[in-house]
Amino acid sequence: MALYMYQAAYTAESVAAQIKEPQDRIEAVRPALEALGGKILVGGYPFGDYDVLAVYEAPDDTAAAAFALAIAAGGAVRSAKTTRLLTGQEWIESLRNAQGSQYRPAR
Image (cartoon, rainbow, N blue to C red; front, side, top):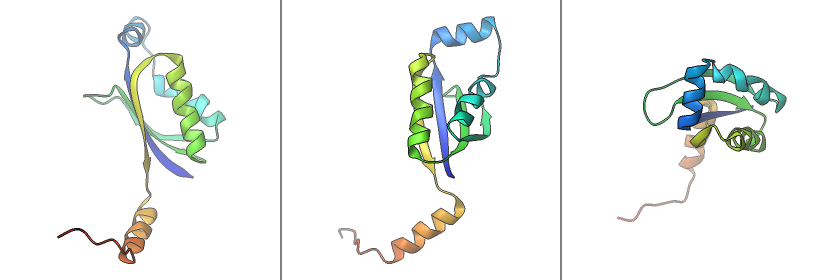
């Protein structure tokens, strides 16, 4: 399965609702991702530009997009991004493929 990192920033209304009724939103969305064939591997609540982060597996890009779209449609996030992550093996394969690349930088 492919790896993805999802980061989102909540709307002010969503943060206010969570303060009023605290809950772990990563656990709240877990069933939605599992219904798409995915699995959250790790999640947390970072300081900075984003309020929530999850690294998860999904069967393919379409499932990852469906997950992001479902969350966006709920209206609780003001911005979000999904990043496809390579495994260590995929990274090594990419490096090996680059060895045979015909690309030459301008000098």
